[in-house]
Amino acid sequence: MDVAPAAPIDPEHDPFAAGHEDRTPPELCAVRPGGGDADGPAWTVRVVPNAFAALCEDAPTPERDAVADLFTALPARGRHEVIVNSPQAVTSLAELPVDQVMACMEVWRERMRAQSAAYPHLVVNERVEAGATLPHTHAQLFALDFVPAAVARERERFSAHAARTMGANLLEDLVQEEVRRRVRIVAIDDEAVLLCPYASRSPYALMLVPRRRRERFEDDGPTGAALLHDGLSRLRRRFGASPPLNLWVRTAPRDAERFCWRIDVVPRLTPRAGLELGTGVELNVVAPEQAAAQLRDA
Image (tube, rainbow, N blue to C red; front, side, top):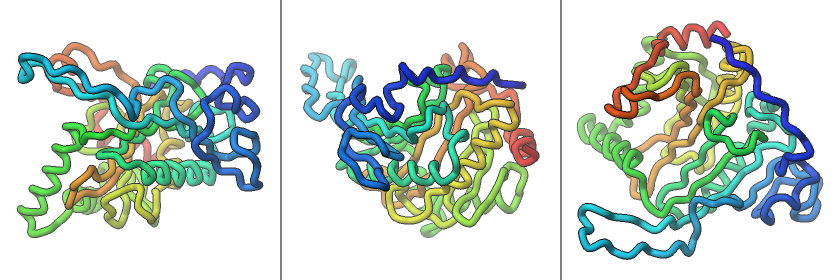
């Protein structure tokens, strides 16, 4: 299974390129090691509002439906930001130097910390097949004023596991068992563990978990940036080019007493078709144990 490389970015039509700061909304913040004015060049990571935001702080409340138990709606309230990961015109984090990945992940954390949201959801979509509307590597931060159902269910599982085990952490226990078994581990460093999760939804899915449990990604401590870069580079070597993928940071939602942050990476190598969409049953054509062995060798 090989992946065709992404088309090169046309610098003239790249609004995230250095020197094109006037093609984005005014910046919220930026890292400029040598100083300089806002919305000027010489930045290494830059944050702007999303020009086509899915959320806004003054979204109107929908009218209440007469049959509220059948038709309900919430206002699309919150903030939607874009974090340009680098001035380099590349399509993947794997193409950046590891120091630049560390720098942009620190900004991810700063922007998540800056939100007064029920749940800050940070994503990276790479290539159009994974939903990227612009090819230049960037992250998006959705500061939601509610906790999504999937995240709330995870919060409940963490609490239930802690109650069953007299205070143990669900993800910490899972990673300890994965390290003991070794079959799905891809790599380990001083900060984090990288593995192909058991019963992965799609081929070559990865999960990065900190070595020392922390509830929130946005809190001080290691980000696992070097191991994330390593994992993305292994995918690139395995397929001959960086595959289309979605990446997101799962952090503790509001009111979570037990949690542990992680980063999920899902390459988009196979489509979700009628079985997956119609039943929720996922068909993975590459077992995570096999994927982990190949990525270790990569």
